[in-house]
Image (cartoon, rainbow, N blue to C red; front, side):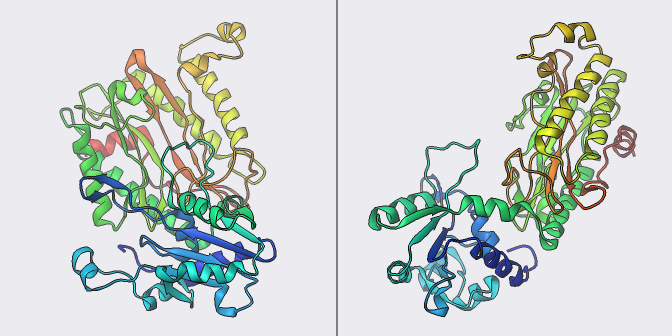
Length: 429
């Protein structure tokens, strides 16, 4: 791994908090992510399943964790199963974790090889009444491909149909919502790397550069800063591309007079930053571009004040819609009279601002937590209002990552340039 080792006490504490939520006589099973085929004899780059990492710190494929707090044998309360290496595997794929290394990373004393999993699981299920399976329950995610937790979970249910099966996802979502000091520090590091990449491209962007050349500068900064890569597909969108919310082709040329919208975030120790910025390709905002930019910036500043305990994502989204609607009126996109006559099911602002403003952030860029969750200290969320006027070749999005505290919110991206004068100054220095 590229980053300094995380103290295994962090993972041990996470397991203890999870175990405390289980029903009596329970066994919980967590599997690593699959190695997904790319094509030919290649796999896509491996990234660990977030919950397994949160509980173990292990980033290796074919890893299994069992948590059984009521196990009658003490060393079966936590068991980690890892891939057993050999000379051939080491030669072709490189080093795999030894039992001692896996124990040091995770803090789990009982580490076995995955060939022992079936035998151990049968022993545990003799006394267990409940089996917790860890399925992906993200509400907006749909895929035809079954991950390892689902596939092997279905096999387990077929083999042991008389046990009661429970869901780990709600417990994990609740635990991961509140970030520990360790997690906040990792997120702050990811934000810092992201900011350095943005500062780097401010000095590189000019008319004629391509979106992919800009991405290459970001990739370079991420790599030399020990990031694992991008937390999500980066968006480098010039001109009208900026009005496509999830534009990821990144292959067009940036032209003078265009705005260039960025939406990217470094992933450091599996924790992801999420930043959006918008800059003028030629180094100077036009008067209209600056007016639109400042409208979005004013809304973001006001919204951040409301990232406090007791608020919710829905409250932030509703406020963002109201504030952006007023800014659009001032920008002449529609009149107050037209708003009064609009169809409530199709408000006019939706033509120019059609996405939510806040989501939770952590091990996943769209981290665990429903919209109705009441903000508590330790939660980290994004704040990203936007404005998209395709007819004027204007797409603007500004996004910072905000830590909820007992007092004022903390902007983890406060030192990343966002003022239009600062952006122009850095681009022309």
